[in-house]
View 1 (cartoon, rainbow, N blue to C red):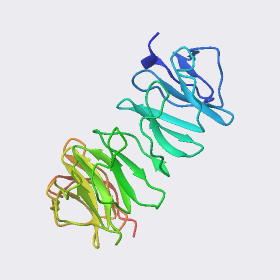
View 2: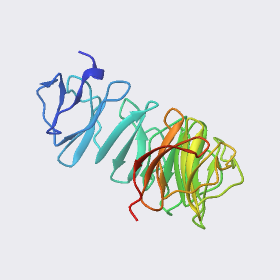
View 3: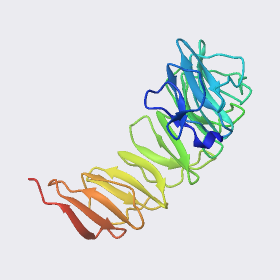
View 4: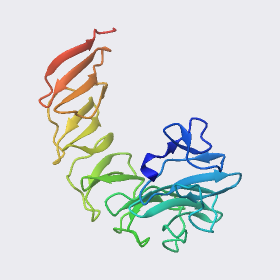
Length: 238
């Protein structure tokens, strides 16, 4: 049996393979398995990781555990949040107020002063600046929010990827990102320039060159990468 075949049961108390229990143990909560084949579990006030046989992967216990990403998992201890390796030991000394998951060698964390930075696998800040908010990296870019509430993209070294700021912003997906300015939502390319002049109440990421959007009158449309309507899914509602 491979851990890749194990999924959480509907009850959330164990994992199953083809609707059959993968092991005898039961927990208060289980999450999905991740590389290298470990899953977070919780029983009462204690949390840890198990293998596909339901056995504990290590002796240490935490308040909460999350999935492994790039060989490290976020955990909550009595003294704060940090990451552990597959052996259950802490990966670095500093504890944080919150930790995300590692993506592309970087992880967003919130410090105890409320600011966000990205750290490397050894727990060190990836750059000097601190942000009001920071999100995951994807395709070499991450969304960060400054103290004035505006958001932009940075590269892996913490440098601005473009000189454009938005009211709201998303990570890049297949070369484009969702962004919102005073006029509404749109899509931008990697240099931060809008793909088209139209603005919408909401937009979804592009899927094979097309995206589902909502107009300000409540209509739902499909647009292409030029912002042109290629189909209508719902008539205007107002």
